[in-house]
Length: 297
Image (cartoon, rainbow, N blue to C red):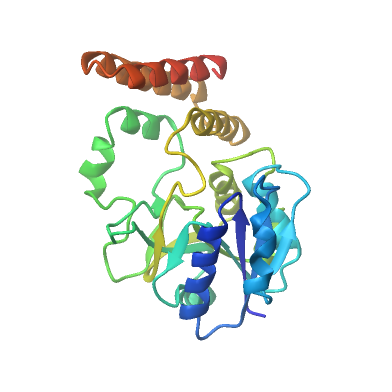
């Protein structure tokens, strides 16, 4: 077996089925297996998946310990030489699995590779990041990404060329391709992260070992993004805030406390703007976000 494709599910059976359909339709060259790990979804319809796809390996987790933990569980049962962690809300547009595998084997010191991500209407989406979270990225976010756009133009997190690009940051978690040996060497995802930043922290450990990260634009994947999460719900914002703080602490990021305060100021700015727009719903949401940040400073 060449590639084990690991998909984590939480109440997204329809998305998982569409993802699997695209894998089977487009993957022509490499041998592969599909492993679906269900994170104790309240809706148990995922148990019908193997009726339609008897060759899919379905793992029913007895707890929901988070995204990284579920991926680790899938990796333990994987028989492939390589692992592709694929979000449930992705759809392959071509033989991305074979393309990623082919490039991974020939690129020097490859640690992780990923393809180009597109929205449902095929607009470019964030596919990687040039920087690990730090004080610069927080300042950039405060100024609406203007600093990065000046340096990298509008495609600073999307490979708009036809060439493989070595990146200084990390590949996004929607399509994270890595060798199983390397994944085991670094002990997989840190399960302290329930949701968000788990691939960022893993990538930092891989980078510290001297491995490289590559964007492969020939591999094309739709990422519906948010299919299994509400658009910036209070719970999502809480997870993101907690996980970012964990990342700063675990990686000993300089000035991480200042980073947290910059994020606080950014939300405060959004709150003031929502007052100006007289958007009561947005005002209340930003007030809750401020409270979440205060509690996690």
